[in-house]
Length: 297
Image (cartoon, rainbow, N blue to C red; front, side):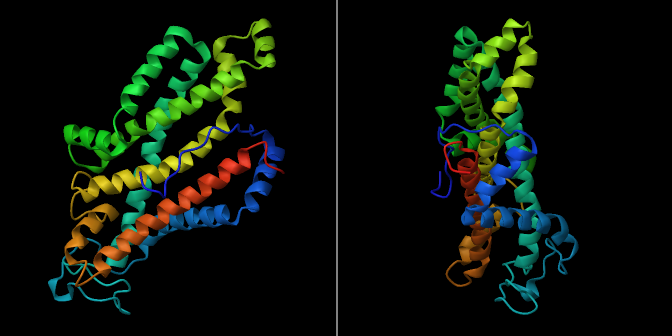
């Protein structure tokens, strides 16, 4: 993937223990200026995606050839595209689509990958071997190729893109959760709880899952950036959101034909994608450092 995207490292993470634990994590996070900037940008993007579409003046999909390919001005802040549509309006409306794809696809990865990782790490043996071999099959395919294959089978639409990117996200969560579960399962207090007669479900939900939440949060934050990149790439190739939907990857694809004569048509959608991906990566890196118990409080 792009250099803007990083996988979480294999560092040990500290569990979140009530308000005091959250205060310690926030204190560590607040010292990381880049992470704070990323967090503030994410909040800004979310607010814009919710409020922005109700405040824009122009229609994001209506065509007006009398205003096509206009440069940025007071009437059209970021100019217009080849169909005379206001680029700023389309970017604002497209932000909700982009974040919707990113968040929902990662949720799919969490709800499938986390249970698989916990089961594999907790029970081990044949179950672990079977689950991880299935995960290895998914990992054998490069992410974008796996997503292209799935979308080609399912068809090009936003929902199918979410499903494809969600399935691609499963192996990352499964592997990280498996490793964290195996580490927590070897702790002495888990053996003590088991000796007291606690069931496997009770041990998993009350003792293991709370101790592996932090790597899941870090992985989810960074995975949103990866999901947005892949979804934009699919739309750029014509396999994702279909015109006239104001999706950033599709806008970038349509604007590349005018890149030399009217660079603003492709420049601003590209900058929007870079900004969102960079924000999630900065915030995810900051969370990873904040959850690391070896860093100073």
